[in-house]
Length: 367
Image (cartoon, rainbow, N blue to C red; front, side, top):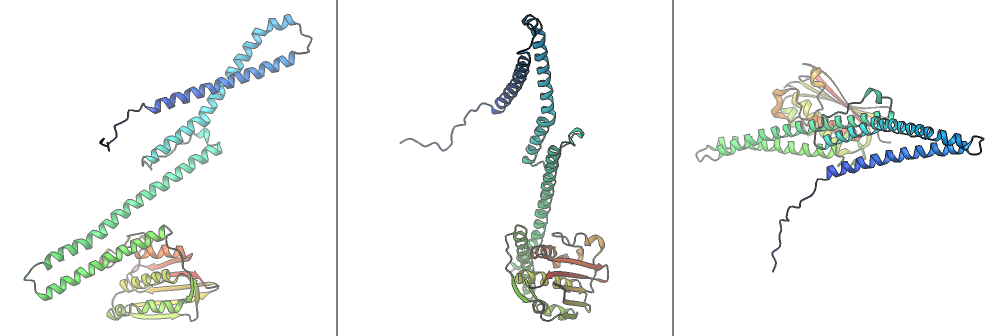
């Protein structure tokens, strides 16, 4: 029985690139020779047609023929050379630059840009091609930066609760640990496990939304009633912090959208309002209709948002108030913004540092 060789022998291959370059040069030269012969043939035929039937003597033609055909040869050669230069400068060179640019993108060099010669700016097709390439490179560079930031942030956010869980699990391993301490450590582990679960859940939701995996499941429902349900789910929070709740919800306000996704939006906005409002503060929730638009606003008397923080409030993992970092993972508002985009609505923020914030979401009412 013959042994089967699972490792094929390395095949020696001749370098293909030099052969391709040689073929390209030969093809180019052949093309220009055809152009030269074609122009010479056309000029010669034109001249012969011009002389046919004329009164010019044959001796005169024979006498002038060498000079005439020399002139035809020179003119054809000059025209061919000019054609070669124009083709090289306006077509071959830009296309070669574009090819080099594509090679750089394939290698992951997204910072590469195509320099456009000033003389080529009037060539609309070439300039648009170079402009499109630069736009693609810019987009790829930004995407790569976002991916690196995302991976870095996710790694950091996951590492923190895992470290806490690991440390407290080691403490729980002590045999002489009192029951009271054991319960305390168990609560810390449970809290960090829940935070880890929330982080992973939000990441998965964001990923589905950004990749359009989630499809809207629209239904007609009472907007005010849904907001009441969301608000009541935080009753224990506002009771513990002694927060005053004020509501102004328009009755019979029906909208046609994905209730499941909108609940995530309302829960996040109300949760943030509770989180950033100090004990004894106030949270107001109102819902009203104006023309064909329904608006829900959540206002708090918390710490507020600075103008610089406001620029990044919907960025993933961004947390303006680092003192409350342990209470969240910076994905809530990013998730809210993406959901509102999917639902075709708008979200706005009004805030003043030290005086609270107001988040408003606007959607179309049911038709």
